[in-house]
Image (cartoon, rainbow, N blue to C red; front, side):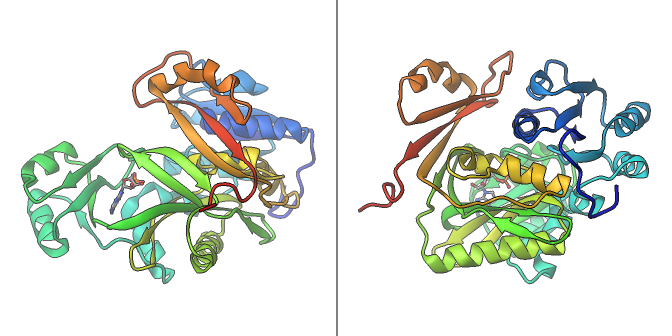
Length: 365
Ligand code: AMP
């Protein structure tokens, strides 16, 4: 398959990662007549339950990666933290969408923020930190409060330490377990929003409108559409997300999380070249949701309509929240999505519920 070839229904999509994002991608793919083969280290995974095939192997198992690549027609990712050598190996055997450059940028917060700034887009001020002395210097430069984050493998607020006026720096530094880190200035935002862009190999793109996101303990709690922001901010958020998707040469999806500051600026927090939790609202509000757009983009199909048909609040079911599932089934406006995870743990994403409201209902005074 070359860069612009259409991969017809009946083909097999290989998905690296076998969590809930892979599961919902496989379900969307099935609706369009595709099959999915998922790859990841966990047995009894959410994606495996709904995929045609599953390879259970480590992300650096070269024999398993080659066998996987040879068994599928295209490879994509629902999880981007896989080693460079593994992507390189896959690329020798099969078309990989999106390409390595996107993964490399989004895997490392320092590379990511530098790239975003080079595109002329603002991030929080930041400094790389590799020692306690560098942390002390960086805190002097950026001021308190500020946030220390590991450069790699951080998600859902993991690998982060908020440095308050009274925080002892050696304690914050030690909490990173000597991992290379980045110190970020604290953004005193009025709200958080995100935009998800789909982009195809020929450069066609569509952007879902911004969702307004609320995080609790660093984990997404709710996403609401429409976001309560002025029209100018909606347009600027879409412009930023599309610019980044084009500069990263995304084929697939790019999710861009942003802070809307009190003085009406947009500051990018992070990007993810894959479906995103803050895009789950699209499943019950748009003709073509983020997972379908992802499949369409990766398979070289025309992108669908991202028009929104209703207002919506997406609520994540984290940990034991999931025990409320029978209640949601009794709510006429609630659409329940469960991920099939065998065991419930605190902080684990178990499912979500999309609460649907008539168009125009949520921003009524
Ligand atoms: P992250 O893992 O970088 O997405 O951070 C998780 C959450 O922590 C974000 O969605 C924000 O709510 C908060 N956060 C992260 N970085 C900052 C920052 N520089 N200033 C203020 N809040 C932040």
